Image (cartoon, rainbow, N blue to C red; front, side):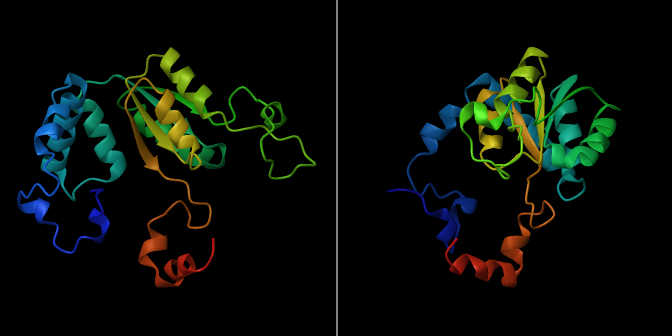
Length: 194
């Protein structure tokens, strides 16, 4: 039976029900020392600051809880202004290594990638390269700022350090993808063919 928790009306798991008889297997996942350490820190921040801190504030507290000193910031060139502010804020607490998505200036044509404007030279986004540069810099925790859908997945796959997202890209909704769910006028568009 595949989970469909999104359609569950009762969410009895909140009260301790093991709907899929997998609790024992899942507990084993937390025996991994890195997962256990991340989970403990995340639960600590949640417990202490629930509803009191912004996501950026929680990222700072989480990284401090884990004793991290070097943070990576992988950002979209379209959010360069935001990345500069984030870099400045994080730099008050950590050594920050920041990498733009267009790093190394690789032509989309080198990989026969779809172009926005085929008549123009177009540099590809390079999330694997962003992650590799942060791996080389030995960052302990990486923060994503506006990477494209799919590019964020590539980054997370290549990154050796744990990854979190500060800003999820949404070019239509000012980088607030949840608005598509909250606003009925936008939500009804999903009834149409995409």
